[in-house]
Amino acid sequence: MRSKIGLAFDRCKKENRPALLTYTVAGDSSKKKSLEILKSISKYVDILEIGFPHNAPTADGPQIQNSSYRALKNGLKLNDVFQIVRDYKRIKDSKPCILMGYYQMVYRYGEKKFLNKCKKVGVNGLIIVDLPFPDNKNFANLCKKNSITFVQLLSPTTSLKRAKKIVANSHEMIYYISMLSTTGGKLKVSPKKILTNYFKIKKIDNKKNAVIGFGITNKSINSFKKADGLVVGSALCKGISDSLKKRQNPVTKLNYMVKNLKSKIV
Image (cartoon, rainbow, N blue to C red; front, side, top):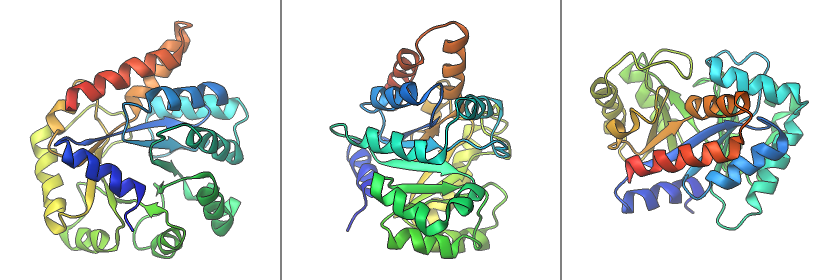
């Protein structure tokens, strides 16, 4: 049976465009606003990535770190993240949700308890940034048993031999990190070079959906339209920061930003 994530990619391919994936941190700038943002951007997005905030987000740049710190300052706990997902999933035509975060929080919560909760509230996929292959094989199998897509990560330094193993063990979606940087860094590599590396991965198994993340912005997104999917995160977290500094509504700001991003790839 095809997963909701797989079906989302199928729809985008029929429309001859990449899937648009957005990343926001749960609880930024508040639990209420965070939920309102998800509901507001939902009509433009194909898959929602939702970060569970961590006090030491090592893979994240300053924009996502700021989002995490705001959420934690508001007292956000992992159960609050689950509640936000549950409430979002109650809306009509909700989109697939991928939770993204660090293994320490999963471990402390308990793997089986965490996955049971994910399944119960409607989480469709997981990205655990500090649980690489092959250390993630057992957890990825647990995800599969719970009908949750575990998303494997690849980077420009992943050897072809290792990439083949990762792709073979991946579920329906692979995340290609476009450059060696924390999230939100400016593109240090040309879009052409990124796509060349990306299609080397696609060549391994063209049936697997591969998305590009890191450095995707309103200015660069049009250059990557040939990919299966594109992830925009830091730009949106910065949008929340900017709106809060100007005492504006972040919901309105992100609705405008995501609508604009979508217009660039259709």
